[in-house]
Image (tube, rainbow, N blue to C red; front, side, top):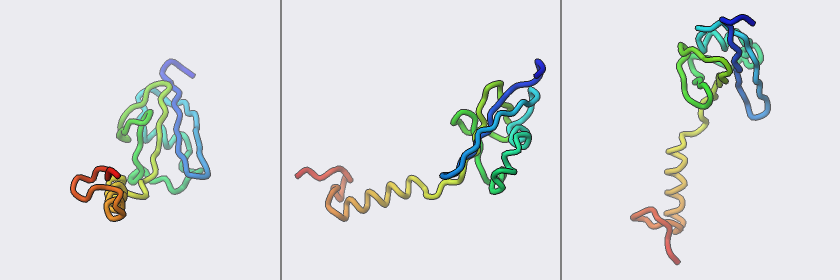
Length: 110
């Protein structure tokens, strides 16, 4: 490894299979280039960088961002359900079952 090279990790996971790959890249390499260099798409052919979001250390990033030495680049799967919609349905169910106040949505005191 030369002074102009850095080491990053590229990670992707499914419920039953995960990968965390260390990659040595040149400084100034983009997130997209680092992902391609890692070869992770050969292990997970479903990865489509035009669809899958990416992040560095749990913070969303662009494919054009440049990682620093020691960064972990994460490839995220699409959400199965919208969290806001799931919460709304759960609150509606609680109201219908009498566990929540129909006006305020707060808990019913018994």
